[in-house]
Length: 202
Length: 235
Image (cartoon, rainbow over all chains, first blue to last red; front, side, top):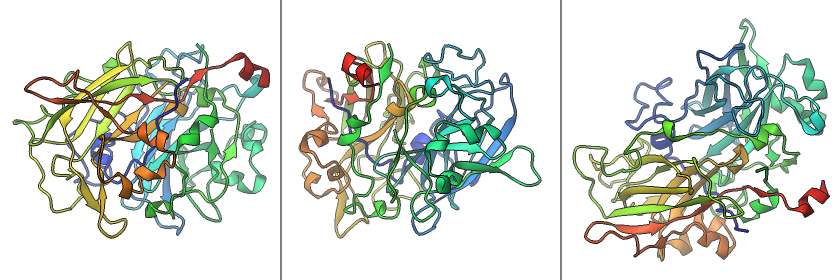
């Protein structure tokens, strides 16, 4: 057996390597010459399901926006299938289910994607639609993981993971549909403090 | 192959709050992380193949009209799992300062020159044996504002994907014998000496190309190993 390589912070200067085009959306000067490998728009033309946009801000322990953060998301397609060999229902579309967004000057990130379907959980019990969220930043020596659930999903009430979370903190994992929109959700991440987002030791 | 990802392996990681590195003070969770079972959502993860990259993406010395200044080096090694098996088709991304210790990032304004022939970003995908290789220049040390007279040791940032989203690793590769090691709170946030050494590349004379470039070997071990009968008994 071999021991793993320790994590180190992504630091303040990852953007030109990991999200070189990521800031174009926000800042006309926020682009670098290197190639984007992973986009913040996950939608592929052949993917079925409801197109959604997720936006949020990342805040530190003083409630200040973190403007040098990178968010990665991993999710199933609209039918609850992961594009991975371990999911034997692997989809035949190009939808990969993986995205990456840098935060802007105001600490805001955004993804365009498809609303995921339900995927099997422990003991075959279905999980409510959710997205795995991974956060990297200067000042974070290792990534932290959380989950995003949707406020318009009745299945949340019986989700095997969400129900493990104390009720008074469950709200930190819920993305809220924005009034006046059909498909825009708000998901803020508080890294530290009284209303700290629930992070998972996984 | 049905891998498991024991959280025990994370013991080698830095603590979220490592006050010597000041930015962790307001950016680390203050409440205990919640334990949860690994479901299909955690046991799967993004897969990138050779179609994600283009030829030459791993050579940082050939992205511009001329060659960058600095000491040309080869950085190579294997991406492995905890059973020392190769991780094939793993996307490896890298970014670094130039030979003067300056990043092209527009937030880096420290008074060292930019090199018009060097961006400092590269990417590749491991082959069937988990092998990867980059050609670049040795990054310089640079000052930062963490404490009085703070300087980062020479390092290259790595971003690696493995068998699942739990294998995801962002780390830094250091160079052997760096005199700044004792003073760097990021390097020393990994408190165990043996674990720290796993972030330090080794000088590789055998693969050094005569008259052309020094080689450094950096093997990367990601989370993930085969379940043993004992693990199965526990479930």
